[in-house]
Length: 100
Image (cartoon, rainbow, N blue to C red; front, side, top):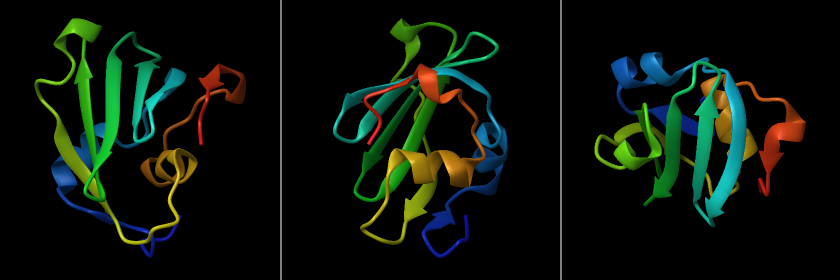
């Protein structure tokens, strides 16, 4: 995906989160998703004020304490699928629930 839709906010944070393999993705609310990575970590992804924030932790209980700003949404026509594509995340479609 081109940089026309997103802008990287912090390169170091982007590099940490870029390319993750996701075992599952579940929509939690309109702009919030919970995922589990292939290495067993939990990730919380949310959009606040056109900023995509993510938090990675060993347990669900620890999520929400260390969110980092990854990318800025530059258009109003975004979706979680576009975020996945830009972040180069992969997940089997059958393991993605209620994704818009």
